[in-house]
Length: 197
Image (cartoon, rainbow, N blue to C red; front, side):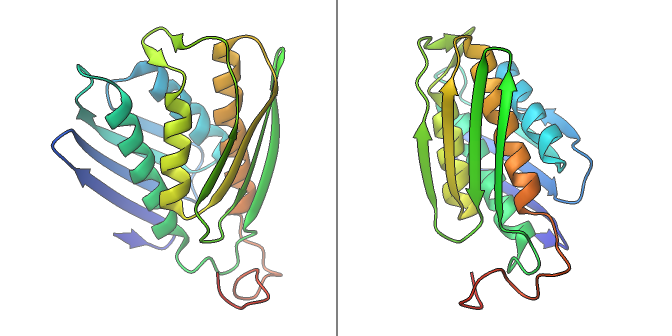
């Protein structure tokens, strides 16, 4: 369901139950949770720097692994963006952001172009942050990009601290999204010479 630049998406499988509410013209407010504290912290940063409002509720088979829950969160959030953006009339379409976090520098570039793709150029030495497998950030952004029908490039230029790295990545993506979904009165229809995205 979508209304203006808002959307609600629900996904129920044998492994997870996730509900996402999104308002692109929000104030960066994150609510809810899915039982994975570190990931919820990352979504809070993603939302705050993206200047959209995001509510996520649900649960998954986290006793087995966090993978299904995080991937399905990415699917739902991506689908919500796709619905809320509609035909993409008037949006800036592209966004790019560099975010520093002490010794870390991350870069995200996004294009809401109906060409689903993730380029992930991130290597970390640490496999876990508490109970969170660091590779799950890749899975989240892949599910998000594919379901938002966006091209997303995520790059770690340098960094040592795993928490700083993931924090910078989520902030960078949020900031890039804020730029890309911004409405520009100079854009008539969609920002494409084809006349359609």
